[in-house]
Amino acid sequence: MPAKPDSATGCLVLASGDVLWGRGFGAEGHAVGEVCFHTAMTGYQEIMTDPSFAGQMIAFTFPHIGNVGANPDDVEAEGPHALGMIVREDPTAPSNFRSMERLDGWMARHARIGLAGIDTRALTRRIRTGGAPNGVIAHSVAGEFDLEALLGIARAWPGLEGMDLAKAVSRETQGGWGGGVWRLGFGYDDAVGEESRPHVVAIDYGSKHNIFRNLVHAGAKVSVVPATASFDEIMALKPEGIFLSNGPGDPAATGEYAVPVIRQLLDTKLRLFGICLGHQLLGLAVGATTTKMFQGHRGANHPVKRLSDGAVEITSMNHGFSVERDSLPAGVTETHVSLFDGSNAGLELDGGRAFSVQYHPEASPGPQDSFYLFKRFVGSLVKAA
Image 1 (cartoon, rainbow, N blue to C red):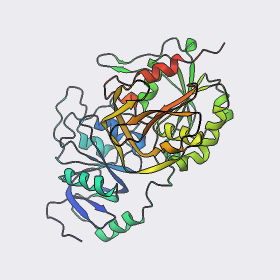
Image 2 (image 1 turned 180 degrees about the vertical axis):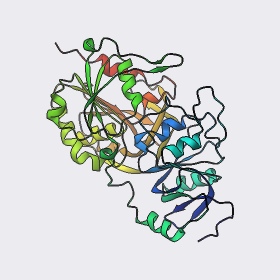
Image 3 (image 1 turned 135 degrees about the horizontal axis):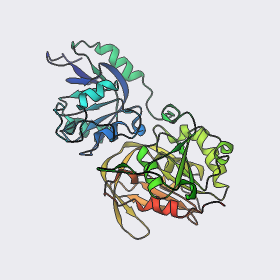
Image 4 (image 1 turned 45 degrees about the vertical axis):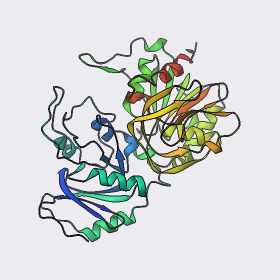
């Protein structure tokens, strides 16, 4: 084990035995999970609170994270789901009129660990060539670490493959969703005229709030049910459409209880729309297979080609599993493809009654390249009499 520098108050211990020393911030303690990198230059609060990052710690490739502080509006869940963040520079005092607190204070308040002073370029190259490793992030103000114990924890962690995390991050009860997209100076739009809107039931596998806001903005009334909701519980809400949300973990593991319900929903006349994990689960439901990717896609600048007309969308992605193109059965068409590595990024059942994309259209990376998907889905629904 490498000797600890005198100034080190944080470290990242990889299952390989390598130790990266740095300066801890946020909460003290340790957390174990998969180490991944994210290429977005902005939106660190949205990233940290995305439930899809459960079980992972994020190395940000952009060196200056924390400059705009933190506020209660730029979140995608009630609190962070990523285990921690790894950054090059120490978070500085915020410089933004919307800031309500420093990032390091926000991290501490939500019991999340930060690690600064890391060569994130070298760590990113390591992940690109060797895959996403398991590791432990640790912070001790006193600089005291039991490296052997931390290494044992890192090596004992089983990894995301085969792990169902949707149940851990999904809401536990059914409820309505109110409010549309956020606008500077106005806040969140009100969902007026709900009774005249087509009713979308969203299955929460670890959803981002802005997906529901965009469904409302597109004209839907939205109800949200837990990941484990049964077919009968969903149909009792009298939906006109079904939305399959994003979420963390291995889709094959979540699919053990989700796929039978989705297949029953496909047997109805309802229209379905899925994003990210929802895309993968729809793929499994129609007979395709999913596999764990070598390093995954995580960033706000991923080009995706829309095969229907050749248009390129700049998308936000966050996934470590993918639908295998060659496993798509007859009656299912590939609609989008990643221009980074050629992996599948969208599918559609013949007739267009069910479709899904691997990326996040609600994240505004284009910034509006993919909003048409919400309009297409909600516009296809007919309000029940």
